[in-house]
Length: 363
Image 1 (cartoon, one colour):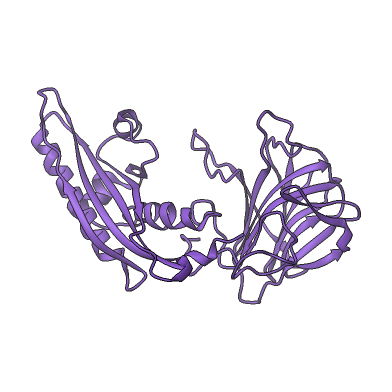
Image 2: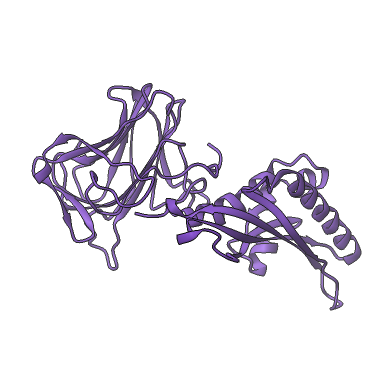
């Protein structure tokens, strides 16, 4: 998948309340597929399903082939091995998250089965939090289960399970349990895409600021065909700048490199009553780092890369009239001060104005 479009959002959002009565605008209710009403109740800040259980369903249309569902859960008592917790079925393929018969694992079941690493579904650890599971199903049948919203760990190892879905059996999106006692703290669903945590966040604010703005710019630069970007920097040297320490910018990624960050977000004014739509300005900073004993050459190389970055972003971002516009930029060119200075960092700051729909945030 690609990063979620401006028109894509979580069409069903639960915060531990009755699935049949969701809170907020543009929030689709769930229908009880199996079970009885009394086996699900609000318990604290979660929806507790116990007894003979409940399975809740969202209808999936024939043209909705890329699906995502997120659930934050914990166990009061363990569901039996094979109990279905989450399921996505797009009419061609089906994928399920099943209980493993213990407090520490779940299974991703499609045409084959993959089992997760250690989880704390019983919330027994110190400062325990509910386990967050994201299940996605693409139109080609590829399915993934992300745990704790982590795509890669600190060693760049993938932190998700992946299998191909089995044949379709009952089209729809489902959550619930028929054995054990499970607390459902949040359940979010969208038919707009099979989105990873780097493509669509649970928070619309984070999706707009980090993903649609910062990470999207990283992806655009990685795909650039301009000479210095593709030959001198390369995809591995273009990253979102979570870590801007000197160690990260010069040792972990050898210069020349490009680091992108979303630095500041402002909302000059709310233009409609109740703030249902707002204008927001996003400051994106791009750092170009070069290194060399001849500082002049490092300076010139950095400026050549910076020029290509500006040209690429000027022609490929901020082009949605009335929705997303590039409205300003500032460039700061580094210069040598100390005799032993060998690293040059040029800085480009871009300001984007976006019109944001605030009414997609209630839960």
